[in-house]
Image 1 (tube, helix red, strand yellow):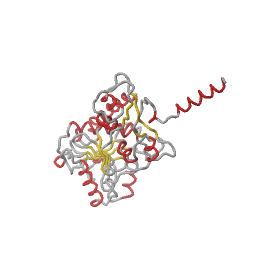
Image 2: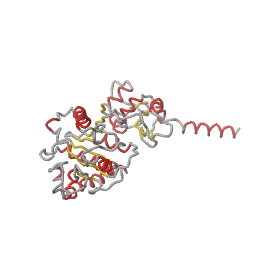
Image 3: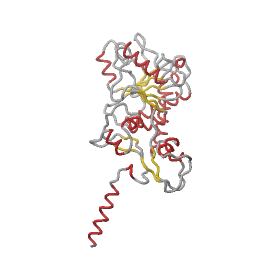
Image 4: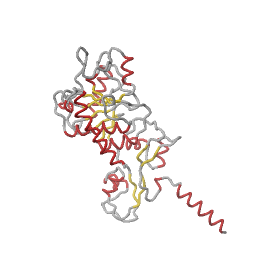
Length: 334
């Protein structure tokens, strides 16, 4: 009888331990780590959602999943003393309205022991474009799993479109127009840059991170261009920074996004890891740095980009800001 009770207790314990997180009464995490054999529909079914909603919750540009990738998922949560809808929304990357809607709540009142379904908020997406705030991008970049090695971050300015074309809500329209120019005007396969920053501080993902950018590094030598771009990731900062004064929000986003990329790829700010378009001959692909005389170079990312487009400006003005931001981000991850 004693053996039977021990066996029964053990089986019960194992059953409880193997419950999926969606069924746990008070699971503190709404992150699922992709395992071998997983696919979107399977994970969506487990967590009571749809594959399409999972893609929107996580800013996924395709159905492809990689082992180790992290996904935000809906969870069931049991209310404890001190909980509020706002607190739960902040804790689980949701919103008060989403939680109320998912649980058909007519007020903000909660009671201890109440069980709530908490869905993560969906990111703004149009096709493969993903538009995010700085905080959303931080969550997104650390949850992603990439297969391509990245050793340098390219800083560009769009020149056109500039601030004059941005109206505060046309992010996707401008992304589409840039892609049309890259495909039809330059003959590239899709939008060239992985990331675009905007005057309002938002950042958009365009070209998938696992596909090397295409750009004007060795326009007369495609072999050289592909070699330069193989381990690069391109950021286009919307604006003309030979002229425009950068907004405070965009400035903070450029620093933050660059710092996050440094941390994600294990890089340290230097002229090798953060490079300006101005330092390269656009025809031959030669890196000339400040010795641009006699070479075909652009002013990009702008003569007023964080104090200038020289290596001295980068070292004295931009890189220190990125290093400081990296320290701040590390402190939040402990």
